[in-house]
Length: 193
Image 1 (tube, helix red, strand yellow):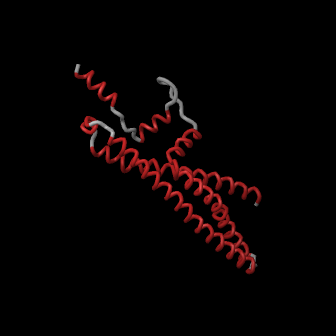
Image 2: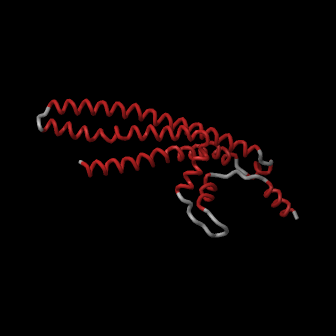
Image 3: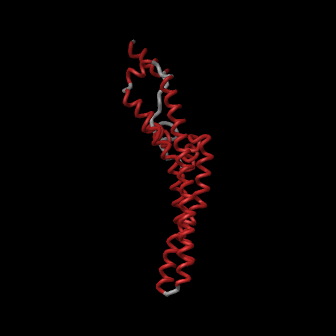
């Protein structure tokens, strides 16, 4: 029948996965209705595979971030010791702490530039790669696919969906590392101090 012909024709046609399809695939594991959440490590591994050659810039960004964070965390300490020195009328100690505050803030700002640059560079190159791959997948589709699919949906996949995936990837690394280091650093400072 005509319906059987259409179903076999559509089963031969490659479909373009959306972000929701990828999320669903990542959350499904096993056969049938047996659904389990995948581990964070497996998800991280999949994100790194998506990054491909740009993972070098992600790891460089993580290294620079790890170097920057102690300077960032030291700024409130130097503000506190400067105020304490001024209260105790220790002006030499206050000058020393202001100088250390200035140096820490300067190093923090310079390294923060490089963190943003490296993560931003990786993000833009990942977006470019994902868009090229998505566009290539669209071009492999048969004419019937374009008859069924709205133009706006295809444009949305190329513009916003690809950008969201790459943005999630780069900021996932930055904020995960930063959160762990900040919590550990502040807890250690509070215990030692």
